[in-house]
Length: 340
Length: 118
Length: 155
Image (cartoon, rainbow over the protein chains, first blue to last red):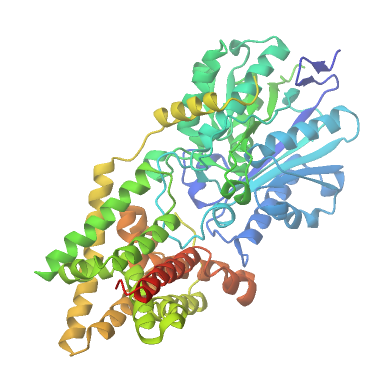
């Protein structure tokens, strides 16, 4: 089988499965529409720690331990970890996962990190370099607000286009061991910059990247929207969704009927004051682990395209007047029945 | 009567700044700087005093008043001390606001813990 | 596909995004700012009048007014209440000196975990710093003009 597909995609010859996944979230996420799906909801935003950053680390290690428990393996079975987060130098991951005592490849993909982590993990397993890989990420509202915007006690008005960073960590074990969910292919995303400078409108900044990866996936695999039960982005939000529909239409694809966005699923913007929707690395990761994968396990969905999106910026780049480019990593996930 | 004047003048300044917040991408920090500078400029052209006499707190409470305070401090110091007054007057006039904010802010950091938004 | 390099096309995209992005109702936001801003000024007026009743001179009364408003704002910031007011009233809570106080208290409270010197000390003026810098600078600049005009006997 030719594994290199088209311009940006890979189809795995060897079988790569998602053995299991876990999600740990905060109070607001637990109160949202997906509240019952998460493995653990923690009411204390500090997670019993002394700072927001340590809280995020604690959340990561809890998610990691949970997924190992669910997969019935130990940390020693994990060959390598692919993890990252939004904090400078990915400290939440570095300090959170040190206790696992396993090799770590630290990543940065902004909110697309889970897509990146799963892609790289799948490549490692498909290449025969590992039997079990841990791919995970996290975000915490307070630590991100402090890093990128304002200290929490500072008063500011959030425009309708703004999103709410999810406090949550999602983890997956990718394995050569058989399960009901297979990673059949990936479409590696490239940086797409349409010149937008509004960091309060992430959907607008990231939609072009999502459109690029989704349409490239269709071209590379010679597929149409109908070949997927669902096409799901990470956190484009309400506004990003409309822009994506328009951009896809311009490319000749109508994906509206089968489109979902994790940011719009995780919160109820009418009651939770979350404006455009949820965002952050933890958004796509926790929704994938809690809600999307189970639907693939049960067979409700046979094949989905999971496309978490990230906005690539730093405080420095923003103040220096640079734009906010986006990136989107595509992962094709398929249901595998008991008979297979 | 003075309550009414303070209310509508102060409120109007805030409402006008709200337009800036909504229509431009200006961040609050920039608006605060704009207000202080405008206050100083109005004060320089002797436009602030009549405005302050009419509106009282409506003119002194907004950050415009802080700019006026700073310029008046420099002006009085220049009148009394000449050139060196340019350096002795400003920060001194703004001392109450600056020290107050710093001292109470610091004390707050000893008493309060950061809390999550909900 | 890929990124857009042409500036015209970038502008087009920005305009399109602006079109599809919902905005707040300006009038409603202005009214909220007007009312809350006006009320905070009235609170200041109450303090000024009280000070005058104690026979304080204008300057001292003004100082007490600023100090009291700053104190109230800092306490409300610590209690997580001032932020809610700003969320509701926007400029109505940012423009008065109470907004300035909130912008100093907020980093102080948040950055205590990073230590007294490098946390609170270095970052307390993160947000309000420009106000002090440009306030002092512009009053110096205008003062310089005034001094020159005085020398030239224009004023």
